[in-house]
Length: 515
Image (cartoon, rainbow, N blue to C red; front, side, top):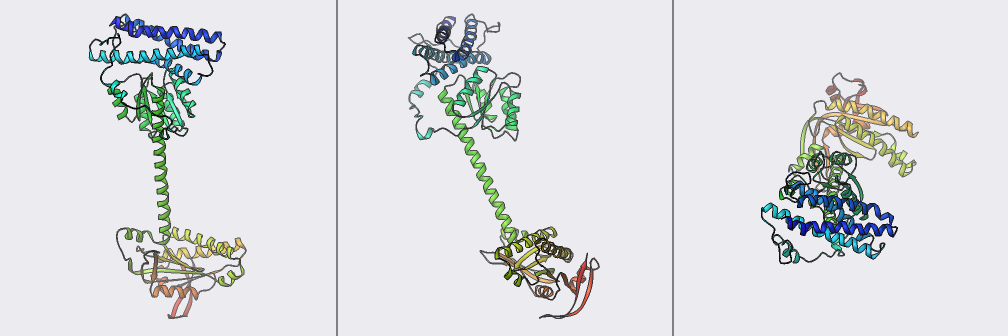
C-alpha cells in the first residue's frame, strides 16, 4: 500500500508543488502581480496537501495517530485539492488570452495532476472501504471500480450551446464554507455567471444572513466548525422564511448515508468536492430553474386566490352570503316566505330636476359618493341592500336570515343615512335632501335569473314601505304603525296622524325623531 501511495498519489502531489513554483517564478518575472495572491493561495494549499500525503505514506494520520481511511481524512485531503483545482480552472478559463503560453501550460499541468489525484483518492477510499488491496492494471495505475467508466463512455457529451442550456436569470446565492479558498472560488465562479453572491464561514453566520436577506439558492458545506452543515440545513427547512430556499450540499464526503440523510433533510442536491465546474454550473442552474418555476407557480396561485376573492366580493355585492351558501349547496331555486321583516326606502328630493342641471359626470359622482357611504352603513348594521333604482335606495332587515331585532337595525340606520345626505350637501354646496319610509311585515324573498342573478323582495310590505317614503317629508323618517310596534319604546316618535296612502287606504303613521 505504501508503494502504491508513493507512486500514484505522492508523485502528482509533488508535481503540483513543482509546477506551482514555476508558475510563481514566471508570474513575478513577467510582473503579473495581480495573479500572485491566488497563486500563493494555491501554493499554500499544495503545501498542506503534501504534508497530508507525507504523513499518510508513513502509515499515520496527519494528527499523529494511527492511519484510518475515515470521513475526516477524506475531507482533509479533498479540501486543499479543491482550492488547487478551483483556482487553476479559473485561471485557465478566464485568463487564457492574458497570460503567456508557458504560464498557461504549467497551470494546465497543475489541473491535470489535481484531476489525477482526485481519481486516485476515490480509488483508495473505495478499496479501503472494501478492505482489500488495490488492483493495479498493466500500466501500473489503479483500475476503475465498478462499471462507471463504461457507462460514462456511452453517454453523449452535453451541448452547452443548445437552447435547452440557456442561462437562468441572475439570482441571489448564499455560499457557506469554512475554507476561505473554497468560498473564494465558488463566489468568483458565481459572480462571473452574473449572480449576486454573499458568503458565510460558519452555520450561525449563514442563518443570520438567510434571516436578513432573500436568497434563491444556498450552497452549503456539510462539514463546518461548531454547527454542522446538516444542522444548518435542518434549521433552514424549519423556518418559514427560508423553508422554500433550495439547498445544494457540497462536501468532500461521498458516503451514501451522508447523501441520503441530506436529501431526506430537504436538500435539493449533493455535490462532491472538488467538483467539475460544468457539473457545478448545471446543478446550480437546474436548482435555480426549479426555484424560479416554484416562484411562478406560487405567484400564479396567489393571482388565482386574489381573483377568487374579487369574484367573491363581487358576488357578495349581488347576493347575500347565506344565499350564496345555499346556491353552492345545490339549491336551484331560492324562495323564502319571511313572516316579519322591515323594509326601508330612501329617495332624494327633486333629484331628477337637479340631475338635468348638473353635468353627467358630476351627477354620477354625487350618487356614487352618497351610495358608497350608504353601503358602509348597511354593512355595519348587518342588513341587506336590495337594490338602487335611480336615486332611490332600498334596504331590508330580517332576510334572508331571520333577525329578531330587524326593526331596530333599520331604525338605527335611517337617521345616519339622513345625516350622510346633509354632510355631502354641505361638502358639495349642492342642495340635497332625502325622504325615508319604513314598514314592517311579511315578505317573499328569492333569487331571479340564471346568468345575471338578482336577489329581490316582494309583497304588500314592500309596497307600503315605498308609499311611506313617497308620503314622507324632506329629511324626515316616515314609519308605519307596524314598525312603531316592532320598535316598542326604544325610539321617540311623533304622530303624524291618519294619512291616506295611495293603494293602501288610510293608515296611522309616525315620524321617527331620535334613538
